[in-house]
Length: 134
Image 1 (cartoon, one colour):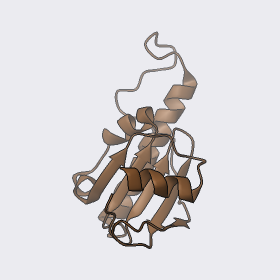
Image 2: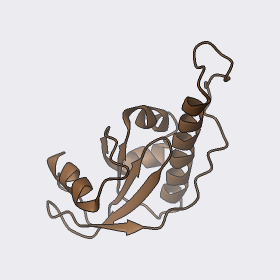
Image 3: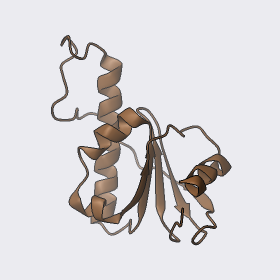
Image 4: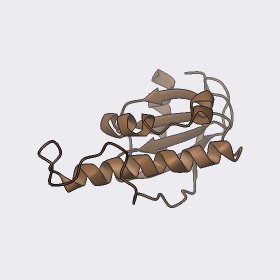
């Protein structure tokens, strides 16, 4: 994958978020870890079911969905504030699906790539390798 310099790479699952910035250019991907703002996971995404619902009996799934929604809210704010010009999102498939529901059109406009993989907890070289292969 040809990744522009200074692209922000967000790696998320239903519980964790890591942010990186590409210091390399083109095919030479060099990620640097960035500090992560607090994610507000208190809002459950629209359309989510109550825990007592037979369609979604797990509180854990609702918490994961809320975290994914919170990550998207934070990324939307950063894009709208001009802090992110290019973005790659790598997320566990379920989390990525929840995140997509809340993408602002400005976020969609700066989105370079999505990868539906769970790479949270992986090393920077492993993430770089996944991006190079994308």
